[in-house]
Image (tube, rainbow, N blue to C red; front, side, top):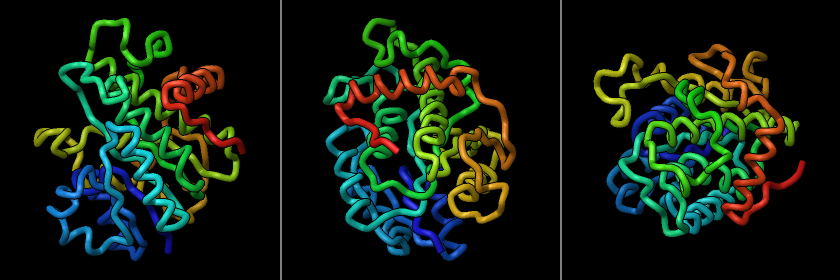
Length: 257
């Protein structure tokens, strides 16, 4: 049985994935934004192999999450599930970064760089990533007028590119990106067409399955099927430039192969 760390796993898709994996007999390390949030779902967290606590808006707390996970031991897989949708403003973090960038892009990058390397990495993206081209000209929204939808699309393009870059750089790791669809969660709303179980199924499968179809890397998935992502995400030049910028913004370098 595998041990899997899932960010943003006290609610929504993250919790659904954790529940699915626990029901299959796997061990799961959960993540909660705060100690109060973890306490509020104590009935669920009591089944976990551990709970890492920290706010992904904060680089310092994100680094603390990495320390907590490393203290538990090496993960077999990590599902980078946590994210925010459209934010009303740039909402600068303590480090001065746009909130959407900090949570959706910088946090997965930091956790990837700082947590002991697992066997598998899964990054949650969105079909909306195809509208995120051109972000490197102003990655942190310091020059442009804020556009919440564009910022979200860019952040989801970033995690696809990150997944693909790691597939190239870390050949011993299976690294993939997933579009779960528009799911009926607090973020997606009650009118979303995709149920929670369908929405969580692909990332959970990629995290633990030994089926040959799941033992691949550098792919973009939607409901257990591979799809073609935006051209920029598949471009090694864009991937490398993105990682260089993320390293500059965070002060943390991605470990080599």
